[in-house]
Image (cartoon, rainbow, N blue to C red; front, side, top):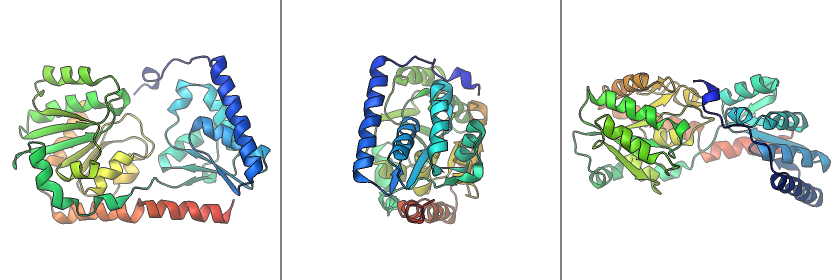
Amino acid sequence: MDVKKRVAPNKRPTLKSITVLAAAAVWLAGRVALTRPSVVHAFLPLTNFIGAVTGRIASAPLIITSRRGLGYHQDRWPRLKRMDRIANRLSHVVIANSHAVAADMAARDDYDIDRIRVIPNGLDLGRFDDIGNRREETRRRFGLDPEELGIVIVANLIPYKGHRDLIEGFALACQKRSNLKLFVVGQDRGIGPALAEQAQRLGVGSKVHVLGAQNDIPGLLAGMDVGVIASHEEGFCNALMEKLAAGLPVVATNVGGNPEAISGLPGCELVEPGAPVDLARGLLAVVGRLPEPAADREFRQRRMRLRYSIGTMVDAYERLYLAGR
């Protein structure tokens, strides 16, 4: 996809925003100087810059900054590119949450990839214990008949999450499989009416169910058959991890850390972003393998527990903090 089509116009910072930023930097520098922490660890572009600068001013022994997603923020706001590079130089360690993010950062910022440490996100996997026992109750609640297959996307309704692509691909898949239903979970950020109109126009309005934001994601996933990630960009997608932790086979776009998460997992398909026809292909490939062996579901769940638990993530950060640079 053309990056220029999805980046916002560059806006000049206001005097108020500059004042707020300066005040935050001064306050943080004072806190770091006063408390003398052994580690200053910052997340996200603007706070990476503030944290790295104030950490150096206060002579913090270990300064860590984090890249949590692909660097499209630099395309949207070019000033952040310069701030990222300053933060990189002032950091002792830079963390990425996927190898794709690390490679993107190295290329964009002309940074040595060997100096970037990859620590993936972690999930509270205890929330997914025994969700198999909730399957029938969830399916009844959402009106899924035994012969129907529930496809679910969990993502706020934002253009880059690819809902339009998914609805078009879903409509194509329904031409060959009439027993599919799509459940859209997430907060509407303004495109909900357009998506509803699209579904009606494509003849799948009765098959697309927009549920809004939901609190019990594990319980909802328990009743579904296939998960979808249709995003045009990702760093390391927690929603993908949740679907795999629930044991679902997943169709995911080939962006960010998605390939890393599903590599070697049975029943999963990678598709190109912004390509509804390929998304339909992936959906049909996955549903064509259903019902799948219980061992496939168990393998996906076991992989998540081994690699992406909160405990695994915390252990990695703890080792870094204790070892220093």
